[in-house]
Image (cartoon, rainbow, N blue to C red; front, side):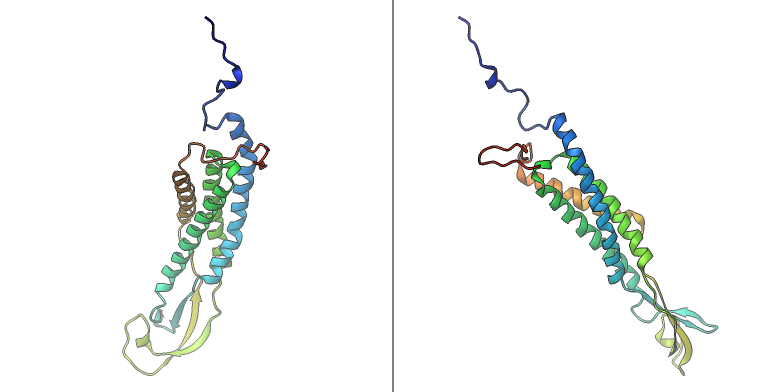
Length: 211
């Protein structure tokens, strides 16, 4: 007795796995998304330059320089603001990438990580270029009010100036890439499907495809 099976009922590929053609189709969209993330680094750097505090320094004639109380902490504040901005940038970029359901997969994940890394680096460089410092202003100060040691006495003529804030070392951009990757991977874990509930992109009744 011979049993025949219709070829239409035989699986042609393992379900839930992306084939090479699908991965290749994801490349143009992934490259565009990575380019958008790099461009976003420009206004992100400008926003940091607007928020980052400057460090005020008082120059005493013949007595060196000193900082008023609390000013030394502003250097740390500037770096902390930069870290928070690039971390938020990475997490939001990861969430947006996950929303592109018809492009979910390793290609989009790689584009996300590369785009946020380069975008975070661009933000740091743009912020450093746009960081401003106030013009020197002549003032009268009490040497004991500065960070340097000094006995209370008559105010001395000095010059109040400021140092532009620094976004910190270049590797802070890694925080953006890490935030994006974590957001994307955690979303995939919560989804729980092998194909990450990816749309096939084909139009069918009741299930419109996406380009």
